[in-house]
Image (cartoon, rainbow, N blue to C red):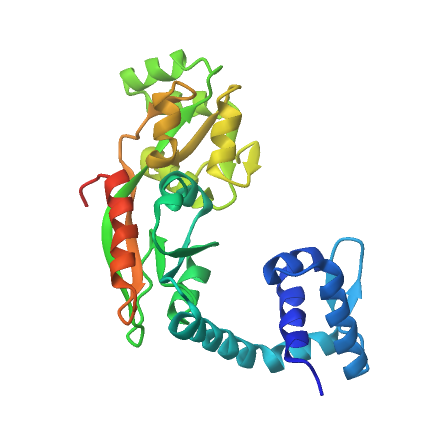
Length: 303
């Protein structure tokens, strides 16, 4: 009889693309993941992936199997989460989703003080909200509301983030400051384009919005360096020259420590309202309130 764990392993390999990433997602060893896959392929009698040096590419049989089992696997995962929360946890356990930078700056310093268990997940807002709807997450920090009449998710605004222009420690911002003082937008745009630019892959929307709202056009160039996170950008700028557009609360400490310089908040503020997204049927409301208080305290801002 087939082992159901083989299907779970197959799903993670399919979605993550490599045995290494699948093993991380499963909290398992890579050899163990290989054993499961080999056993499933032997049971089915067909190859499910083409092995390459960089990626596991699904075969047509693999694609068909994934589409056939995915809904059932997701249902089992939801049941597993519910079972863990209602019968196995000695302590209350909250599963939260947000961007990694928000977690590192707001929540990470407070983790040792929490009197309940915490499981954090990082990802894009759409995927995190899907997990929230499916009962896998209890709280998501998001700048976007995703309305659905049948959803149990509620959105509570608690703060704002403003996208600001920052400069690296070695950047000569004198020409920029002069043009800002003279309100010469045409010359300012040309001057900004002469600099090195940093951005993060998940922040390009902020980059385009800031440019459009302040220069009434899309940027005619792309950043020189696309890094994995805002924190990476700030670390790079703290030693070199360059410019970046980032949320203000993520760079506040670096500005205060003179690691980077706040150059411009924009003539037309580029802002997002931040929401607590949570399910109305959440069991651990007291623990949720503690997490929310941490955010509100550290991100004091009128909404």
